[in-house]
Image 1 (tube, rainbow, N blue to C red):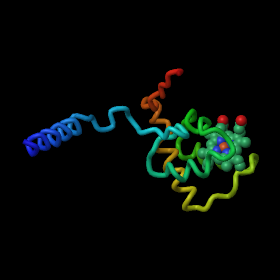
Image 2 (image 1 turned 90 degrees about the horizontal axis):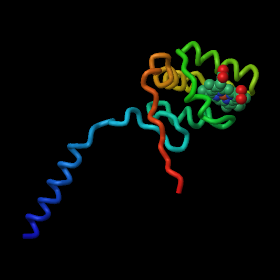
Image 3 (image 1 turned 45 degrees about the vertical axis):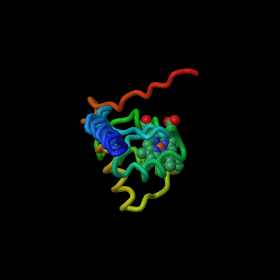
Image 4 (image 1 turned 30 degrees about the vertical axis):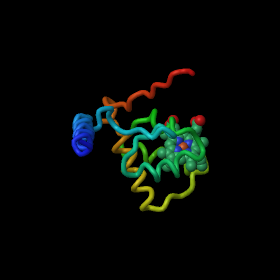
Length: 116
Ligand code: HEC
């Protein structure tokens, strides 16, 4: 008797899991920062959100050169520190992949919050 119920529970759980669409809502968004969770996300969150809102990033689109230009501009004028080459590469990979010109049509889903 118990065994049957257990098996039923497991089966149902598996069916629910199987029915869940993978990535149904598009890219996964970090609740905290609004940044797309993808390789390089941790580095960007740590390096790029100390001075200003991550929205400056999420609202921008640029290719690799464009992002590099913005970084150089901040380094020259806004006190952004020199980034280690490896870190800079990770950040540029992340930005050009997730906030590149081609990403325009796949904006991250809006976060819906209801007032209490
Ligand atoms: C030392 C402080 C500092 C850090 C760290 C920093 N920024 Fe900025 N950034 C600024 C300032 C200041 C501005 C200008 C803000 C404004 O105009 O209100 C800015 C502006 C921007 C803009 C808007 C540029 C535009 O043309 O509108 C983007 C995009 C941006 N930052 C991305 C980044 C990214 C990506 C990183 C990580 C590599 C980063 N920032 C790290 C200081 C910083």
